[in-house]
Image (cartoon, rainbow, N blue to C red; front, side, top):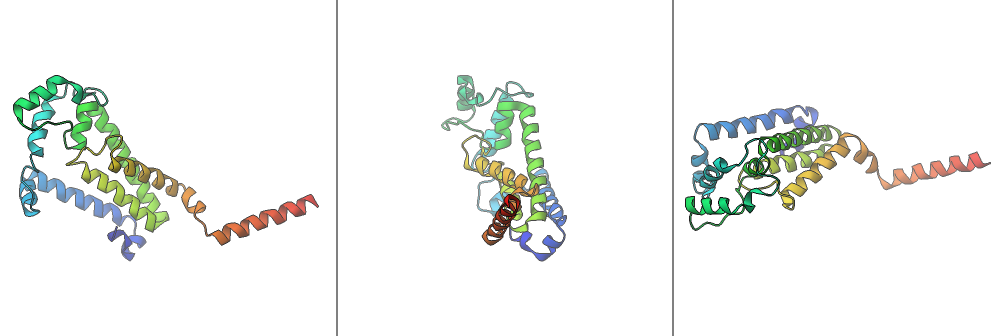
Length: 209
């Protein structure tokens, strides 16, 4: 949000793409080159992200169908899943994978991940369009969408009643409205709306005469 307030960003909205790609590539290389554990330790966290990496390694092979998953909100209903996880990670009852992307994979497979990816790409594109039209609110929408993407790496953020999922959907809807010009037109000053209303009444009065 602070970066999108820079004058350079507002003059060249395409720089937002450069910023996002740079952050994504940096984080990706850090994880691929084995720097994730060092980064977590530098932030004062456990290298396994408090056991999350162990959970991910255990549940991914348990997906019943890689293409379509176990079905919406069905994976954790299986007694076999809980029994197997109790054997692999004893003493830790689980009802989620602590990773939104893995959670979608378990429930809806690669089809679900593809749909989530389409939603993210569409939301990000619309938020950048909103930023070009209204930088203040557009920057907030970009921040919401990127936060949802990052947050879901370590938490199941794509569940129906999860606040991060609700805010993400609201951000996409608002960004779509701004990109289409609806919100900008609707947010005109009260005085301008009153003047327009007065003008319409005057024209109607003349028409009636």
